[in-house]
Length: 85
Image 1 (cartoon, helix red, strand yellow):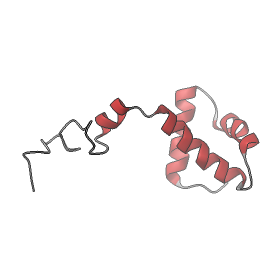
Image 2 (cartoon, rainbow, N blue to C red):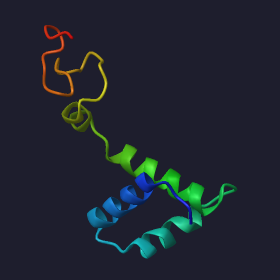
Image 3 (cartoon, one colour):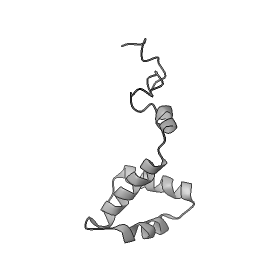
């Protein structure tokens, strides 16, 4: 199966989090494959896994987004309202 290195990394991280072997995870994903095939099903699974796990707190800690819930700091920890390049 040909996947991007980032997808393989994500699959390994999921396996560590879930305490499962990669081959077992792939076997669990395979029944959900549709017209796109196994690689597409794996990519969709990875996206859905991390989207489900994402929380507002996690996004803030990672420095994602700049909406009204934003902490006011840039990803490198500077104050977004006063520090300018």
